Amino acid sequence: MEPAHPLAGELERARAEGAASLDKLDTCNAAHKLSQLESHACTEQRSRDNVAHDKELESLRGELAHERSSLGAELTTAGTKLHACEENAATIVAERDELSATMADQQTKWSEEQRKVEDDRDHSEQERTSCEANVAELTRSQSSCRDELAACTHGHDSHAPTPRPQSSDGPYPD
Image 1 (cartoon, one colour):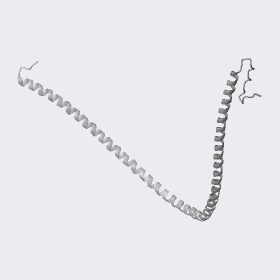
Image 2 (cartoon, helix red, strand yellow; image 1 turned 90 degrees about the vertical axis):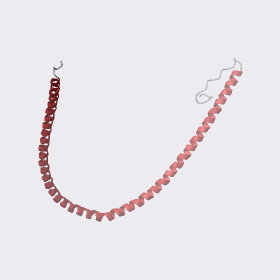
Image 3 (cartoon, rainbow, N blue to C red; image 1 turned 60 degrees about the horizontal axis):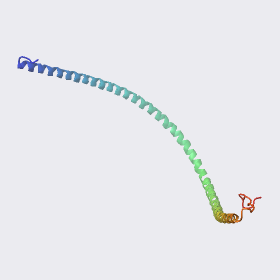
Image 4 (cartoon, rainbow, N blue to C red; image 1 turned 120 degrees about the horizontal axis):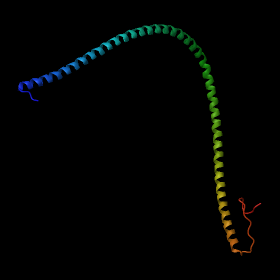
């Protein structure tokens, strides 16, 4: 429905805009109040944290003083132990040098033994390869002989006695 007077329409429109502006203002005021509450809570928490921090610092200062006195006693003990270690160092160095010389001699012996074992291994490998080649040649020769025997056997007449079966060890069974 249209208002009767043009000013009445403008008045209605202005009232509607005012209501919307008031809603925006209420939202803004509520957000501001919430922000103030959060800020106040944060400030209070920071104060509590500062008090706790100060207490912790005092506690640590006391522990530090106690640690310093304990460390002084430990330093004295460590100095005494260090002196004893320095006295034993010369003996240990001499023993180390002796062990190093013994170890060098032993390592030389082990190297010689290792060389001999490697030579024996290489020689055994050569012999194995040679044996495998011989076995292969003998297997081929045996196969050829069997082929010749089979050819000869088929060439005879059918009244000839049948050859005995061969064993897996060769043509002559036990």
